[in-house]
Image (cartoon, rainbow, N blue to C red; front, side, top):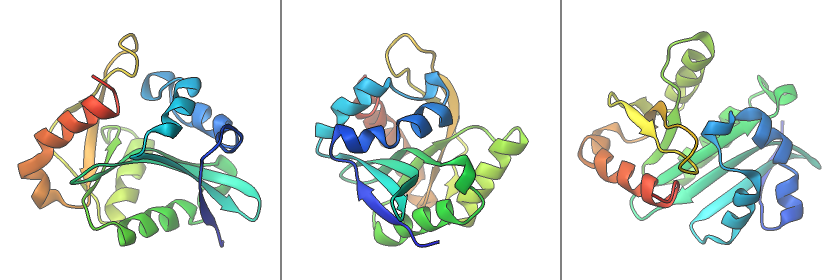
Length: 174
């Protein structure tokens, strides 16, 4: 499959990922869609549509911080899963990013979460041992117990507390 990444810069572009965004993540693990639209103006936040010909087959949202890149959300449409799209997108990100990449995953306790962790491990990520509580997106939704994974686990030992603080104060605006 030959795909391209197109940065979402308009509300029209963002509408192309609405259904996938809403259906791929439970409400407590995502912001409200209208709030996502306001984030398009934040300089270090970017959303990219994964496009095959003219069809949106996935998206990835990333935060570019001084000492790491945080992947907030990443999803491939159900009909395109298992075709190497996710692997190609993440491989491209890892290859093009010198800084550590950090992302959140569910604890590996069921088949789906175990497969997801395995997917990222095969791409060079390591799961960090610390319990990580994803802050509430709006102060009303519950915190969610997750784990962090990174491409630089040795660095993470020294920086994980700072990464968590940066994520909380920028991504979740706490």
